[in-house]
Length: 152
Image (tube, rainbow, N blue to C red):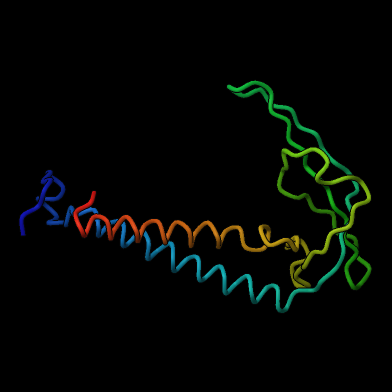
């Protein structure tokens, strides 16, 4: 089979250099990891314990970036578990002021065996990793198909 690009590494190892293989393999890996995380998250949500968390503090962080100053707001939540233990956890930072205010309640799910494992019950927070991985899988498969039909 004639290869478009032949380097020393490809000559010695006799590796295929067609990009459709690379994108197809990457898409398959993204798909497998995405489905694994989906199964894991569904199991966590099914067997986890629902509770309500209260915003107890909002940490403001100001950093200098190339575009100027960047402000992030990091809410700290308190959850009272079913056995009356208090858990304090922080949420991923938010750049929107006013998204959280002190005293707000949100629905969370936590693992009784590992109480520090808390998931905020919003669609993006529950499925963020899965959405990103499956989107990357679709994009990789589309690029692989474009290489197969010689569009790229």
